[in-house]
Length: 169
Image (cartoon, rainbow, N blue to C red; front, side, top):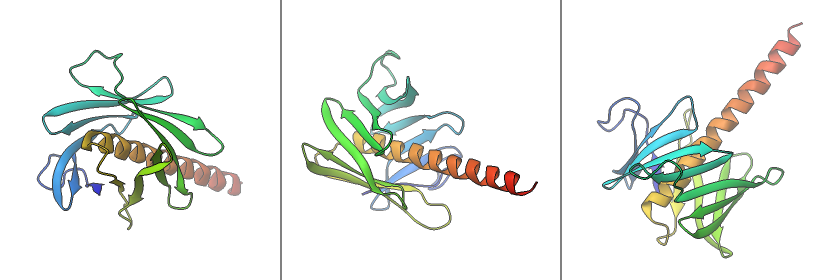
């Protein structure tokens, strides 16, 4: 299982979040606070993750901007399902728990990954993936979970603000 660490922890500069496996850093994520974008360092490869035309995509930093190696798009707004292409491997994502905001990922009807959370006051996403899913693809799925978490937090904040404003008149 991989786990997103706190930005600036484990000796990394502020704004850089280590990704741990069994307590040891295995990758690094520099996620933007303002856009759905990030840079990930996995081994000696730098990946660029971003939202493009309604899709979440990933490519090597050295490749042209239009290149797509990893892609995720919402397949059903109502069901909350996602269609993910991990370098030619089709994966379907579906909510595992609406309360916890976790997802299950399967390929060909076989489970390949599941998200989770560290819990506590400032939960961070985790990803438990099958050995058939390479680390850089696990990092992409983990980044997707970070995006989902931020979207949920923003939606709850907007709803709470509207309720407070509406109730104060």
